[in-house]
Image 1 (cartoon, one colour):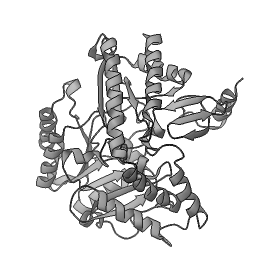
Image 2 (cartoon, rainbow, N blue to C red):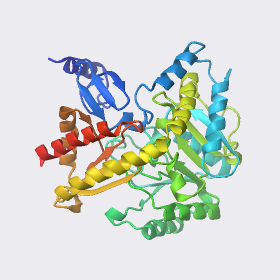
Image 3 (cartoon, one colour):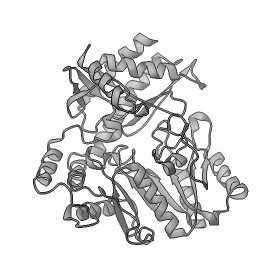
Length: 426
C-alpha cells in the first residue's frame, strides 16, 4: 500500500465522512504552481487551494513576513490588545476598494464569517430583515450562508431548515438562456409577490459565480442592481471572496461594472494561504453595529495580517492583474482549440482573467450536462499529474484557478496533460 493510501485510511478512520477530499494526494511541499506529494510525485496546480494562493505556494516574501511576525508574537486577540499590522491592512483595503465613499473594514477568519457579518451589518443599518441572493450562488457552509447559497448538493442537502426571509432570483446567464431582463423581471415579481422592498435589508451577489459555474454577471445587470438598491434603500453586497485580489485581472471583479458596492466580502486570496477574511464597506453602514457586535477570537490574526500586507505588495510589484489577463488569454486559447476538436463534449469555454471554465455536455447540447465526464476528468487529471476542480450547479464544469504567479510554460505543460486526459476519456 502506498503512503498516500495509508494516509487516506488513517484520515477515513478519524475524519467525519462529510469532510471529504477530492483525491488521495497528501502534500509534502509546494512551490509556486507545483505540488509534490509524500511519495515525491509532482503535480501542476490548477486549483491554487481554491483561489487562495493567488501569489503562488510558498512565496518567499510571504514566508519572510510571517516568520518575522511569528518571532514577535502569534496572537493577542485584536479585540483585546490590537497591533499595527491589522490597522495598516485595513487602511490599504479601504483605500483600494472601489468607489470614492469613505470606507471602514472589519476582519474575521473565513469567507462564511465575512458573509454572515455583512448581513448582520446590513440588518443593523437598515433595521430590515429580508435578504435576496441568486440561484447558483455560493456564500459558505454556516446556517445563514447555506441559506443564501443557491446550490443544494452537497452544501444544503440534509442540513435544513435554514433562516427565513431569504429569497433567490435567477442569475443572468446567456449560455443557459437567462437574460438580464428575465432576472430583473423576477426581482420585480419578488417585490410584488413575496416581500416589499422596504423590508429588504440586503442583496448579495457574486460578480462571477464560483461554485455556480464561473458565470459572469453582465456589467449592465450590476449597474441596474446598484440603481434599484439605491432606489429602495437596500444594501448591495458584492461577494468577492473567490473573485478578489487580482484573480480576474482587476483587484476586484466589481470594477468591471464600474459600480461601488455598499459592502464587499473578501477572503481566499487576501493572505496567501493564512486564514483571514474581511468586510469592507461604506463607513456609515459599517458603523451601524454596536461595539462588540462584530469580531471573533482569531479575527485579524497577526500572522495573517502580515501575510495580507505582503500579498498587496506582491500584487502591485509583480503586476499580478496583468499576469491574470495573460494567463486567461493563454488558457482560453488552448481550451477553445480543444472545444473546436471536441464540440460534442465541450459546450462552452469562458473566462474573466484567470478565472477560467470549460462546461462539458452531451452532443453539444447545453441542456444535457455531462457530469460523468467532469468527474472522470478530475480523477484522470490526478493520474496524469494535474490538479483540476469541478463546479457548477449540475456538476459539469471544470474550473481553472492557477496561481497568478504561474510560469506560462508550466501552465502550457498542464494544458498538454489536460489534452491527454480528454483524448483518453473521449
